[in-house]
Image 1: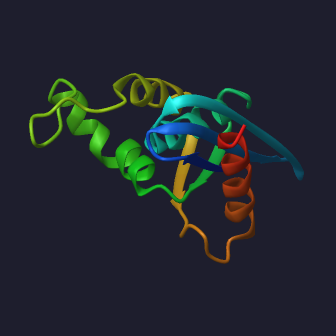
Image 2: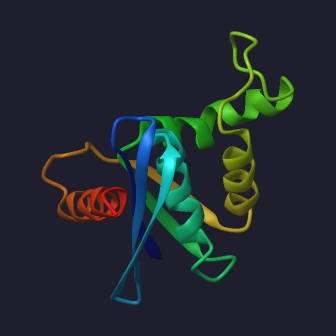
Image 3: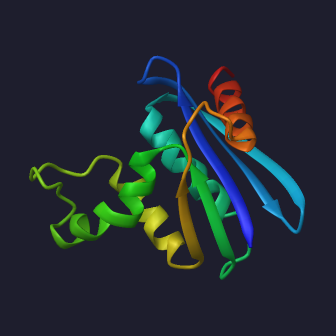
Amino acid sequence: MIKIYTDGSCLNNPGNGGWAAIIIKDGKKTQINGSKKNTTNNRMELLAPIKALNKIPKGSNVQIFTDSKYVKSGITEWIHNWKKNGWKTANKKKVKNKELWTELDILSNEFQIKWTWVKGHSSDKLNNEVDLLAREAANL
């Protein structure tokens, strides 16, 4: 199983953002990150798993760790109703970041993914490491 730790960061929200992922495959750790100007924290949180999934072989068995309940709940629960309701929330508002949700949804169907929420800024070493990578990218 491939393990992926993801995180996003944004200075001032909206502002300069960064995303990062740590991919652990066959005992080898790979770090990826990037930055965007004039973005939001939620966009960076979504971009991290998208970028990571694009780096691994399709069909892989994957566990993705995120400290974003927005990402985990969005992709495992909310997205089903959003799609049924024409990309509207329960409050009949347009779903924000629809293009990123759509991309993540399409990618998710190409893998066997177990989404795992971890508490941010706690004792999870790799979550803290990916948080630092995302914050460094936001500062670029």
